[in-house]
Length: 147
Image 1 (cartoon, one colour):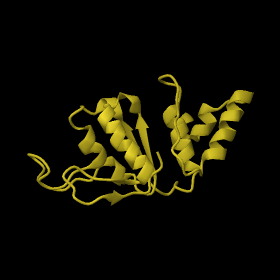
Image 2 (cartoon, one colour):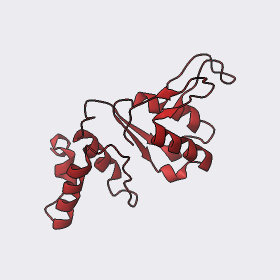
Image 3 (cartoon, rainbow, N blue to C red):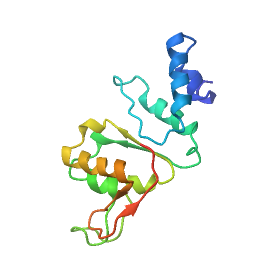
Image 4 (cartoon, one colour):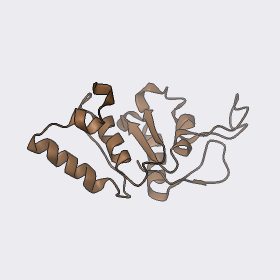
């Protein structure tokens, strides 16, 4: 029965605090700025992110989750930004990254603080400009993504 219920019914009770969270979600759902959702592990950050996505004008686009600590450090950049053919040994073809896959939708970066500072600065440029270079790329790519 629970699987059939929408996430907001499962997560939110009737308390004043939870109603306030619901109102905040509704208020910022269509904001064009990135949203930082903070909280302890297991408090429902991903559910909040999905609700924001579902209530936004981007709801018809993809919701892409990246579990930052689960990706080995050497692969994080290629997983996020993709790469061009020949960018490194074993890059036999072009690969789209999670950022490209989230174009037109939402990219949920779970545990973003776990990323190396160099990669965080590359993400900051993406947040500011909406553009990035895939590994080995000579041309910037433009994306419309909500973070």
